[in-house]
Image 1 (spheres, rainbow, N blue to C red):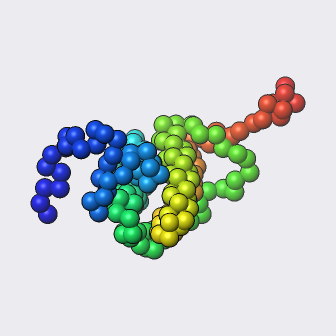
Image 2 (image 1 turned 120 degrees about the vertical axis):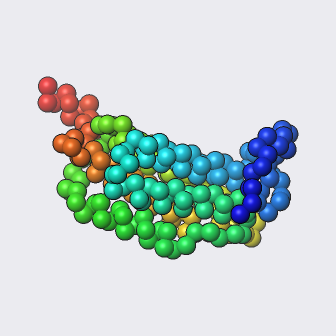
Length: 193
């Protein structure tokens, strides 16, 4: 493969437009560009989480795969009509989610983001994934009105990703004797006092 980005500062976006993978130009405020940015942010937070975990942590394999999948999703969004996601990508996240969840006790309380850095980063990925999912649903609705389609697998993938990172946060919080941070309402706290 040749140089894909030989010139980083092109100045072609100085007037508020950006180029898509098919050569067309659109406003940087378009829903499509918002979604691409959201997916990029999810990927960045996955990278932060990965950097926080030990390099030999068994979760590194799925985190790396998720980052590659998210890059494929960004590429798919960058070229209207192009499909890069495959059902096997969704299955990979689903299988990892099920595997991790099987080792966890039943959830009886709401969990607050926190406990340790890695758990907090999981919750950041989870919440940003939800935001990206909302944006991609909006894009899908816009495209449907124009007679086009956004790959339904993209919405499913982001939905499952947020579930995965919730379960991963629970798993990481419990490692090395750690605990999940449970929510207590002020109403309940005042009764306990």
